[in-house]
Length: 113
Length: 115
Image (tube, rainbow over all chains, first blue to last red; front, side, top):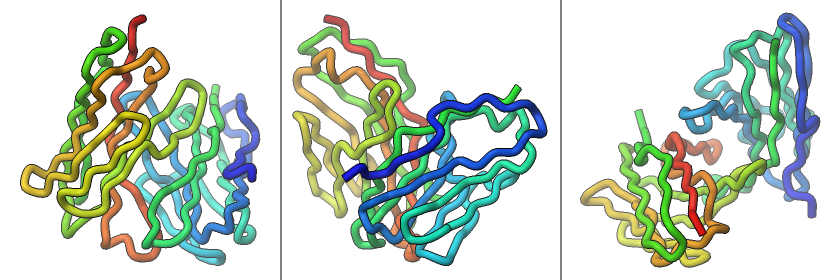
C-alpha cells in the first residue's frame, strides 16, 4: 500500500499562474483533507471532503478550490497564485468519524514568486 | 472555538535526557487527543493518541496521559535519542466534527537531540 500520495513534490510559480495539486489514497478512506503548513503556525485546514461528492471549507479557504474526483482522489487548485500562498501543502485522509486518525502524504513545497 | 496550545521550541536536549513537551487544550465536550511527529522532509505521522479522560497513549517510548481536570496532554519520554529529533504536534479532534474527523493542531515544537 502506498498510503497517501501527492504530486508534485516541489513547484515554483509566478504570481498569477494557476496549478493543481493532486492527492490520492489507497486505504478506501471516506474523508480527505488539504492543509497548509507555515513556520510557527502549525497546520491549517484549507478544505475537506467528508465523503465522496461533498466538500467543505476549512479555516483558510480563500484563493483555493477543491475537487473530490472520486473516493480515492482529492485535488487542490490555485486559480491565481499569490506570494502569500507560498507554503508546504499536505493532503490527509481518514476512515470514519469513530476512527479519527488522519494519515498524511509527504507534502508539496510550493513557492510563488 | 476549540484550540491547542503547546510549548514553544526549539527544545534542545542531550541524548538520554528526559523529555517533556507541554500541551493544553480548550474544547467543548470530550475530544480525542493526539501527538503527531514530523521528521525532516516528511509528512506528519501519528505517534500516539488517547480518546477519553485518564487514558494513557504510548508508542516508541513516548507517553502522554489525557488529563481532563487540567485539560492537558503532555508528551514525555524517559531517555531521548538522536533519532527523536523532529517536530512534534499536539492535536485534538472533537465530537462536534461529526461529518469528518477534523483535527485542530498546535503550532508544533521542534526537538533537537545532541549526541
